[in-house]
Image (cartoon, rainbow, N blue to C red; front, side):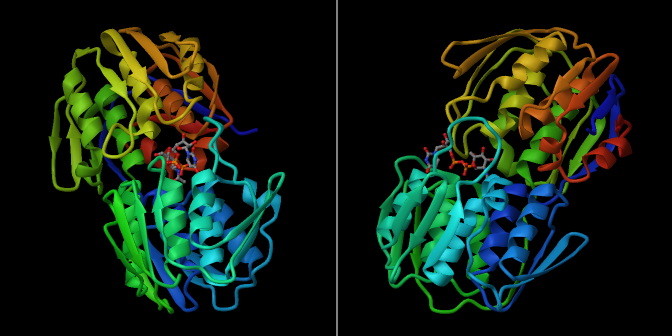
Length: 417
Ligand code: UD1
């Protein structure tokens, strides 16, 4: 099994370019099948989640051509057959084929999606949305058959502003008859990116990026060209890293506005940064003070940055607290950080943890517990003294494009062994 080996403690300087957003592209690719013509998506990151979606497209007989940073999809000859359990379970975002195939064929058969084990992650809100649009759902164990004679616009209130449910309902509603309103919709930037893509194909979606989205059904979607927005979680990961060990380290081709909560918390702790239009430079790490983090839906502090931020908190003087409100099980990486010298305490209900700093981190053999937990350990390894070996690295490669090359280019001693 491959591992990532890091020799820590080397200052990083230069520029890290940010790739296209994972959470955007993993919805754009399934969304492309709603169209029968060629669709081109650019700024596509090279991550294994995209490979897994490609395998689903091939299974469905869609044509997909990948060149560096670009995919072309032609779903004109797609066959609506069951997506196997193996393919469904490969990643969380396979669930977007539920909305896309239902929207295209009025029927989909697939299994419960995969993804990191950071909580129960039910899909009840997705299913409730499909039902309100007129679909019937048959659930047998992990297997779902969702079908409708005809999809009809509806008023859908989400009990929680779920990212996946919001996008999935948009996909199913784009060609439904009449008007659909999603209330208490998620407002993450990726949702606006998917809506822009669908609108470029001729869909009529308004309000994406706010808590009320209106979709007026159209009969036909046409060919289009679309660019994936920069990955705010990748940018945030490197911004935190720059705050810890950067020496004039520039995070480039990003949208600072998408990271306002993180930037505010880093500044509160004492990080000084220069914010440009599409980049942020951190000059040199200072003496940081403890701060409290509470994860929330966008524009609140992103749960996907919570674990990487926990590494930053180990380097802040005093007691910091983290409150995780989105997932029930997102502190496993803290136990791995403990092996490197972090002083952490996780409350019994698994929703709150405290970190006491500042503690020097020391290289150790650790396990990536999930995608962002793996990224946290990688950041920890880069700031630690000595050598860190990270196991289970497939988690990390699912979501970080060219991570070894990007870090090597700015002076990190990191390799896959
Ligand atoms: C997406 C992102 C993930 C991010 C998360 C929250 C993708 C592929 N993944 O995941 O990186 O961490 O948003 O920003 O884009 N919930 C329900 N019922 C549902 C749906 C969700 O109870 O039907 C709960 C979940 O269990 C979780 C919370 O709502 O506790 C947030 O989930 P959601 O926003 O749907 O996240 P995902 O789409 O899974």
